[in-house]
Image (cartoon, rainbow, N blue to C red):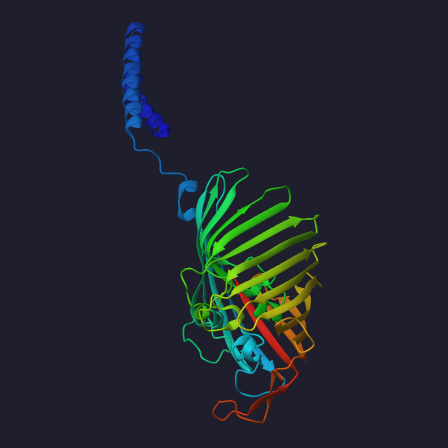
Length: 438
């Protein structure tokens, strides 16, 4: 507006001085002064009009910081994989049969159930309006399509039924930062579990497959309300009330009176080590894999310690205890330890070792024991594109429920043209994965 005002003033000056310049030789000093006064009066009137117009002009548009959509953050990726089992048969063979412990046959790797099969595992889109002291209200949404969406929507742990629904709403919650003390963060809705070191999101794990500890002991999501606060320097505390302890949705037969508590207490011990004690206790509609609204009480105690001593190496140790008070009490204990070392800026090598014991009515020599070793190499083709390869070996010992891994040949297990039998105590699975993040 100031630029326009000065342009208008210059125009006035130009036109006002034209007669003065053209007849300067014929004008006296008095006439010249009179003309200058007239010109100044015209300029003042023009400036007054421009100033008045500037006051009446509409307000400038809101700053970009006030734009709602400008505060939304997006993330996402596409992951696809190929898995191969050393036995080489046609059905969902990356499996095991845990009998009553998990309602029949379930895969060792529910997210990777198929042999000699390509799969689109995750088409993931996450969007969040983060919260802060300047922006106290927000939300988070996560959608997943593909094999993972099918598993989480159907809850078919054996991978055989197939829900034909590749879409799943993984997270959906409102968040609010309350001005209490240093700030208390509230989440209301569906949010990821506080328990465990591994997660559903493929790019955030060291390995392609998840551990038996993750698959058999740990929840995936909870629905309820969660409060998180920092009560001391270097520490964080979370406490929530949720519908139940477990999370495979089609096994969650909702009893309105069923509720459970969840918690997390964590502390940054030093620059490299963070430790947390996490857990849940309450009703478990789907605890131990049973398909009935029993309302049995379930306890899961979880310890996670991460150690990241430098930019090249990171690691975690995860310990779990599980007890489900069903008609036959199911009790289990186990651990998983994993780490990744950056060989170069583009290549990394990761490994995982795990052991767990699962039995009924207390621990004894007849309990099922699982031991596993996993090795994974990853390489960045570009800043957004990563490829990974993996070899995994699982071994079963002890237990009174027979062998748990499939072997090619033998009896047909309800699959047309199939030929497989649960006769093995170990298996080897090889896999590859491609992930593009955006």
